[in-house]
Image (cartoon, rainbow, N blue to C red; front, top):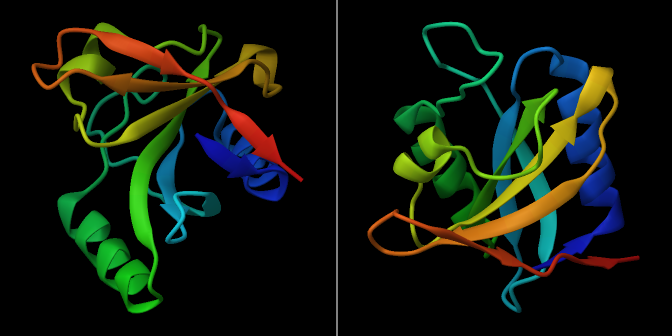
Length: 136
């Protein structure tokens, strides 16, 4: 996955601002598949948000329409893991969309740290790490 440094900085800022809860948002790409924008989403999980996130389907739909009007597309979702590694949890894997990439930011002690990207198989049984290429 190719992502702009500015976009990654925005994601890290979002993750730090919501600590100790998980943040979530969308990864927006141009026609060449480069992530050039991120869009913050509300963590709509109804329970404790320190280890769960949910994106409201209506909010996702509205964001998708806005992005498509600009000739861009949603290629993935980002979220944070407060005080937990930048891997997909069993919950994340079970609720994933196999066509998306998942950027996960570890936030130990409120400071954004390790950031990794994942894809899942169609059955949502396993995840594979994908290289995260940061463009200046």
